[in-house]
Image (tube, rainbow, N blue to C red; front, side, top):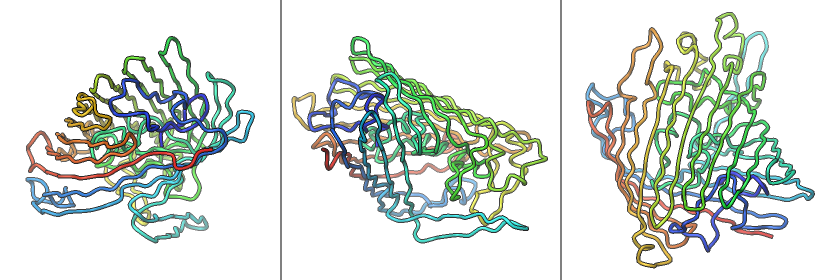
Length: 433
């Protein structure tokens, strides 16, 4: 769900009076005027997806020309999220979200330490059930609030605004969701708030959260799998710092900047004895900037993300226990991702209350932008995508999406990959009191 606003702590979702052609900008930290509630509310969002692809599911196993030609179709339920907000009174509030990914439950790994280390698996189904948010918030005033618990890390536009009505494609922007956790949620403490002057809103959030596990870093997904969700307990010996600043104008422009710094990921491995004595720091840094413009039936979104991993060469010399399912491939010192998408509401321009929005999106990312010494760069991780599609929104909180994506690998030096997708998504509150 949309991260709770900085004043009430309530999750901001569109009401029936909102629409894709609305000229106002939804702010990450705006007040919940669109959907007020007195005591509690229950809602959620979900996605259904059909895809036709002309390439092998193992994209990196083909000949030197790229993934093998293998036409196939898939249908899935990427995510279904249930959200609950409850006001205790006197400024105290509970917020919780449970996410079901791909219709099933995931796997848990319990580490048992003795003379050696043993791992206990609990597999049930190929999907995942995750506690995406669970936090208690104390509101002092609009400008200052304190949140404790399991919270969203709002680095990048997709983590900050991750509901399916907040991007045009049938799937989330591929670059962000490949390089970093998405939706990214960690346990920690957050200080946030906002200020408004003449309808210009500035919001901020500063947090201290659990750090990443460097054993889960990889060539294909950079630090995406680094969140310590494989284990029942989370290391907090060396936490990370994350921050987001967002500025919204009354004329439809929203600008955001976010960052992340984890000073010593080496102390967050399942067994820190494997990293001691190797002089490994493993610091991780990420910087991101994003914008959205929504006015006069035009919507434009863009995001830029750049990251670095210290001591990537030393991390790559270690090999994690294969029982845990780590990929075990080399991680790059740097990675990059950027995209821009633009759409125009044809129905809105004709005065209709529903929306038809054709759109274009260009995206580029490279999870092996700068490999460390001793590691060869793999051009197959240098990806560009061009997507064209259409969104039909009969209601503000319901959208039917269709798009076509042409994926280029290493600027066209490998066989291109094509995907046709159809999706349905919703977001809203079911009960509010």
